[in-house]
Length: 243
Figure (cartoon, rainbow, N blue to C red):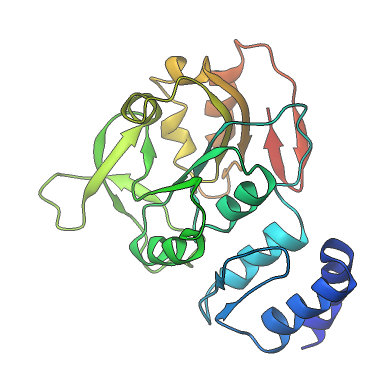
């Protein structure tokens, strides 16, 4: 409980005294599975004994996605949405934006649906991004809930599902431009930025990415090689690279 007590000042600072204290009690003290936060009209769902609480802290206490933009995004793609809390944060901050919340893992996606059902501007998509349309599967089912990765597989694999390239995703959804592309896909950025990226990078205004070189060596080099031919402005916010 000592660690949780150290989090109380962050709750108060980021959510206000009354809202922060209420949220702290619900999340850290009582460990509620289903709760409401003042300022949010819909319920939050966090699974016990998972990384869900850490995801909540990252987004609402550390404010991982509270970076400044000099425009109001209209189309947001949340790739690696986990249980949907990042999509909820974007939906609250940018209520006029259309948000595509992408997550491949079934149990995470079920929780994502529960967390986002009250938001008309969030479209839930159970798949994973890849450099081309291909059959994929979860490669490490015993990993913690916020660290699942995917790998290519044969169509006959019983655990396979249809992965998709960003180009195909944009064309299927009739997206002309991506204003904000958030990517946290546990190393699959190595494939996404390895080839077939020119179409969608040209049509993307801001990329927010977590690079996972500690999982797969070379993620950063592949990423920077892909974006190096474009005029860039880069910054760091709470460990996230913003381009």
